[in-house]
Every structure is written in C-alpha cells, then in structure tokens.
Image 1 (cartoon, helix red, strand yellow):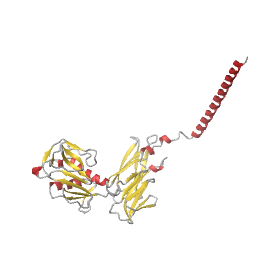
Image 2: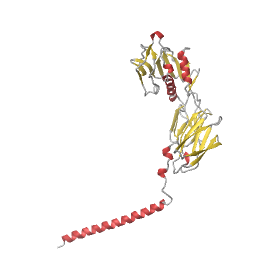
Image 3: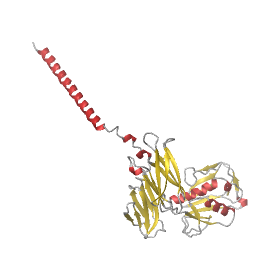
Length: 365
C-alpha cells in the first residue's frame, strides 16, 4: 500500500510504498497522467519493506494516478494527487536603497513560498519603524540606529526557541549591531542581549533592532532562517488552503481569501458539490479518497487530494484469517468445549450427591 506522498518540486513526485505480506515479491506500479498511462515501474521488496519512488512529471500534466495490483485492501492501492499550485506569500519591501534592503530582498528570493511584490495589499510589508500604518497584513519593521549610536554585541543572546518566528535561529558566532537605548513598551521579546531587545512581536508587527553596518548577521544562516520563519508564520495564519494533500479521515477547514469573490463550492471526487457561504469554510471529515476541486465565482481556484496513507491501517496481517478451514476448526473447538463442560458438570453433581449421602449417614442412628 501507499504510505507517503509529497511533491518535491514542480515536476517531481515522491511516494513511499510498503509491502505488508509474507515473502519478498515484486510488484508493478502503473503510472497515469491526466487519465493516460505514462509508464510503469517494477518495485522489488526484497531489500526492505518500504521502497521510495521518485517520479518525474511532464509539463502539462495536472493529475497523477499511481496504481498497485489488487489485494485485500483496495483503497490504499491507488494514489491520486494533483500538481501543487502554490499561492505565494507576497512581500513588499519599502526600505531606502541600501545594504539592508538588498539583504532583505535576497533572503526573500531564497524562500520558495515567498514572492517580492509591489502590490498595495501584500501579505508582508518590510519597512522602517515609525511608518504610518496602512492596510497591510503583517509588518516587519526595522529600528535602525545611526552608526555612531550602534553597539556591536557578540552575546550572550537570548532566543525564544519555542516561538515560530525564532525557531531554529542560531546566534552563535553572530555579531549583532543594535541600538542599546532601544526599548518597546508591550509586545513579546523574542530576541535579546542582556536587557536590550533585538526582536519584539506586538500583534502583527515584528520590530527588529538592527543596524546596517557593524555586524555580520546578514552573512550567517540566522538571517535567512529569520526571514523564512516570518514568511511561514504569515502563511500559516493567512486565509486559504494550507495544504494540498490530506489523509483520509482528516478534517478540512479554512477561511476564504479576499481574492476569492463569491461563495465557495467544494466538488468531491464523485462530482457532488457542497456550497459554503461566508468567510469560513468548514467541510468536516474527509471520507472519500480522490481529487477535490474548489470553485469560487464559477471558476476553479484550487484543488487538493485525499488518500489513505497509513501504515497502521494498511497492515492487515493482524486481521488475517488462519486458513480456509477456520470455520471447521471453530466448530470442532466448540464441540470439545461442550463435551468438557458436560463432563465437569456431571462430576460436580456426583460430588454433591456424595456429600449429601455422607451427611445423612452421620445423622442416622
């Protein structure tokens, strides 16, 4: 059965197939693209029980279907998936041309999920602190001290490693140039050195106390990790589908993005459509595997796939019968138990009669 699947790139699909039966068989996987057979692959389970497959997907193919031969569990023999159509997190950079603006753009360009944009309603606005608030969603703003007011800190730094914005940010070996007099009332301090806050989150605004010169943060892994965390944080809290592949039995719920005009309809694999009005779309439990399509305003705006991907549910060895003569064995065992019960019951009656006879004999003159 299929136990894992994900797209590793726009034209590459990774899948993991596992054999749960006895022996070391070879199985043939049939590969279909948009309903047409593209080829097949021979899978040998002699080396290990789980076998990874990496399949190139030609341009123009939107739906991929992988089929295993029939066995005792049918709904994990077919894997259906659709080519991901990622909605990037738009980032608008409004910093004066300089080193900081260049480093921000370079880090944003290295994040697959992000895209630089000049749109007024970008998901993330990168700007200098003190800029008037607008209609933007998340704000990443920088408090930039003058060169003569900045101090270069080499640590020890305090990092809130449990917050998604600073998870994985390693400041060992970092020289951070910041304003020692910077203080921000309210908010949650995520990065600091001594009593100097370096990154403070207040609502949907992250303020970073950072000078353009005097440090080496931009040349360390901590810088792109911080920017990638900001993009991931905004993506997880933005409307729309967060995933394009779901496991059978999971719940589906999301908020309609503002770019989707009109009511949302979800088309199930059997062609049935479910209408949702308002901002929140709560479909509930996904009980049918296949491709689901999301329509809004009469147009398809997204698609996602649902498959049974579970080693525990695919392994039927614990539920397998002993053999074809199992009913006969059960009947024979029942007969033996019955005979044993009758024998033990007769012995119990005999013992009671002997006890009664003994007591009566003792009382007789």
